[in-house]
Image 1 (cartoon, one colour):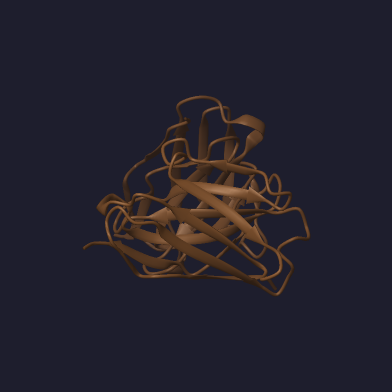
Image 2 (image 1 turned 90 degrees about the vertical axis):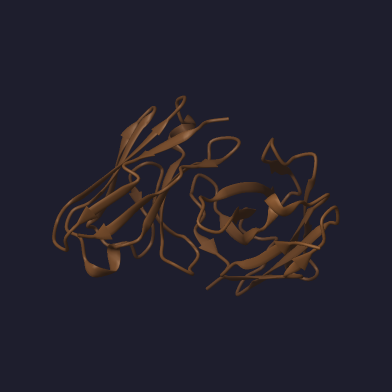
Length: 107
Length: 119
């Protein structure tokens, strides 16, 4: 099983700042099957990024994904008030796993 | 647009079988070559993938749950189902169903349903 480790656990930032979230895999993620989701309290997760760097339908371009192999990054270029949430990475190359999440909170 | 809705008992006794259904609306479950998945999330914790079913009937399960999980498809009712046997308190969680196009992530999710395992 591929273990995904996200860091930091919590990111305290102000609106307008840049957020950089990390996801490290215990082994290489096959076929670039790495996605990112946003989850707000009481809601289902929402797909942001798939295939490491492709934005899902309707996702603003302030969200971007990058990386390869075992190291991946989600960047939010300028935080909007609605971006404060928990973010999960997800590898779907075989037996699927999720990271433990990074909470982006208002500083 | 496609929408998913989970349904089933909110309370299950220990050692019994948890059974949930995910009804698909706005499209046919048997078209499009999608994977239909179940994911769960204990309160305050991370997401855990349970398993998925392809429209052909092929299934993949989380290895840690495989001996207790069955995911099945009912095209006549346009829904798919989850059965998890021999439940314990550790199976208490919000259960989500979701759709995944090939090569994509989980792009459509149900709202989730809370299942509590307790006597």
